[in-house]
Length: 389
Image (cartoon, rainbow, N blue to C red):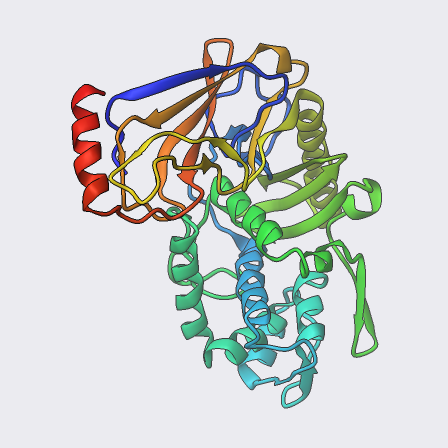
């Protein structure tokens, strides 16, 4: 619904939050050697820090986050089952024979979906990715189409995949630090029942034990994911997520140069740890409004009722510098001329959060109930009243 003249209400609170976030008044961390990095608050979606976050780079095995996203969606929709047996094609087996990460599945064998998921996430198995892709879409190429369609749906405008695993391709494939963190955040939020796979530190299949390459899983108990990656062109990458108290952060470091695998693994873990520690020290997440609560009930014209309950459809979070809650200010902007019919969920205004005079976040105000058009008597009455309003 279009906003016309606005009626502004000023409210003061100690705790506020938001889902869309503007610039925060804290300097970004220094001393990181990663070519690209990005840090986001998982609840608010706020950008906390970044360096060349929109530069297109090779995704390497971070590609597997999107493959897992589609697998989890199939599980959630009931189109796939954990105990379902998947036939391992020669193509899947050959992908694992390239000398890169693999699960060691045998051609022609039957492997459960659950084992393939662990092989993909814990062991970073390229062969597991292809097997899952073929099960879901028939061919890996068709699955890649689903990956790119899902990327567009999630707003990942600087991401393009060419395979399900992230090995170098003859065709251009790329992502950005911002896009890959956005994807990881969506996976965590949308599939909490499956996210625990990312905290597993080892998995044994075919009598071969392999360990999760995310070294922070054994170092920091607040870290519970997400994914490592490496190619010679991409460098050493790591997407991490950690939750401390009620605050969850998602971070990525990309393009770290190192002379060998051991030093590369340590460097990406150290820099991810530094980025997460900085974020938790500098910021806090606060809740402004919970979903489902009526905040105001403005006049609605020509409706079967005269008042429209208005609130927020989703929890309204914000990330703010620690210790700054006393300086927060919330403004509510509501359309002055709301006309029926109005459907539940229609946007009728906006909450605006400020830190002093600095805009911090906004969140849409929506109709909490459907109100149909009123009868002819209501129309005539409201037309007269509008003349004096």
